Length: 134
Image 1 (cartoon, rainbow, N blue to C red):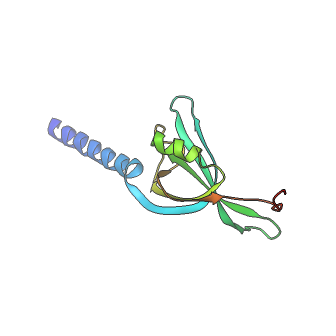
Image 2 (cartoon, rainbow, N blue to C red):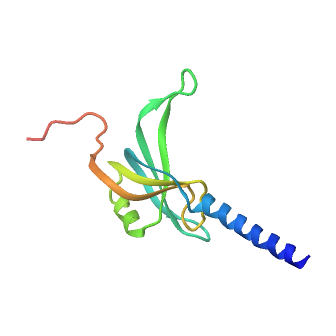
């Protein structure tokens, strides 16, 4: 009986380990998203993490007569990368990210983790440009 209980305990621990690995550490997908960097903030109560939002170009409507923009919310683990992103607000960026099945509180609020900047474009200009003052 003790042998079966020990074996069952070992199998349960192995199953939980495999579950948590695939849920929180297995990279489900990788990719690059492009858009205007809206913000990067450092926030949290118990675990402080860097969180950001990228506004992607294009407009999609789920309902007739409504407008919805593409928003990519992400987390950043590397403080140096987060500081670099904070300096690039309002610019068009291409960000490389990794997607996980679940979020960990010390890694960030989202399951998308940005790990590098691919390209940095010029600042996005809005409105009418005025001619230079003479």
